[in-house]
Image (cartoon, rainbow, N blue to C red):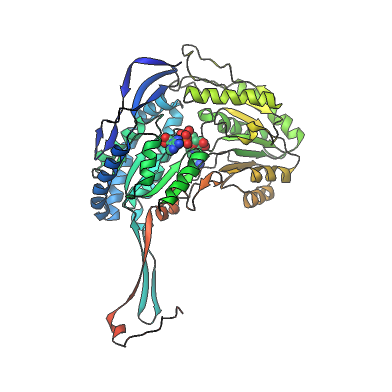
Length: 505
Ligand code: NAD
């Protein structure tokens, strides 16, 4: 049973340029993961409330799309300036609900606005193509036009970054955006909505509707919503992708992950171990690009790696998110803590060797917080559930590979395909790995290869459904529809009518 703070705050939605109270009478709890109690409540919108938000977005979109792309870009750049001016406030708000450290929360905001900055280049990114004289007197050009109202459904683990990855390009392209953020940490999305308004975004162009399945299903079914961007767990990603398609919408849906890091015998082991510690335990492992499986090649590499990890784990501090000395904070909810501890129990039952057990972690003065310490399993095998399932906590499994091909096969055959890394000093192994591995984002001596804003982000297989990635040029394809115009000017008509279809070339 989780205690409630004596004075929990109550959040709202953000519609038509202002905060709007929920009317459904349904609420979700927002936890303070460090204190281990409920600190606030978030309204869960009814289908009618969501339909009202869609109407408001539809109204705002026409005015927004009529602004030329450069003017839209300027408003986005003003927003970037405002977010930078408020970054400390946003990071603290984020840490308080999510539980990640302040430094990590700042990166969450920073990686988000980098995509908004990139999106301000809309005049260039929205250019179409032109072909002169494809036949006598005949020209062809293409236009990229906004879709109208689009929606984003986002996870708890990046409450600033992912909403901005979706909304930056969507808005730059002239769409109105409805965000249905995670109900775990919705304060930052609401604050971002206010900053959009302050930057000059017309009312109704960026809206936040808080809610659960009822809100999501309404967005999926309403014909006025033209596209859905989703990021979250794989079963929900599959559901959203199928339901959006059944309602004639385009969708890009990014799911869970099980990211591997291969450590070759020739790797700089200290560098690899340092990288692994940050990638496995940073943000309490609650990152879709976290490394949850280390794959040392050869028994000797495995033994050296375990020794290097053990000594580093001893120096890690799990503590309050706002405390500068903390390496990572608590997990997000009591349910997450219970699930992760359940997996640690399971790993022991499955026969993996528990080198470091995080189940008894406790922080003085915060005894009720949702703490889990860094956990390390050795001798994990691919048939174990702790290998197969996404645990999404500070739990690292070591699966020892016999040789390079064995390691490559393990990474490629995993049903997820979000991120992967190889640590080696050998360019040939690195190049071969990057070319052959069946995973969407690859790091070479880089543990978390999240691409920068002007490249695209997206996993393969069970980590991503849809054909276009997030941010980079793909995002502008996703958030626009292409119109192709074939034109002949009157002098061509003067030559007389044609009744056979013209041949292309
Ligand atoms: P989640 O799937 O529980 O929730 C994501 C969103 O879906 C939330 O807004 C939630 O309200 C909504 N939702 C939940 N259940 C629903 C249902 N039955 N019907 C309709 N909507 C529903 O995910 P989460 O726990 O918030 O986030 C963690 C997950 O997200 C992990 O699996 C992680 O790997 C994944 N993730 C993936 C990426 C990526 O880019 N691939 C990035 C970040 C997080």
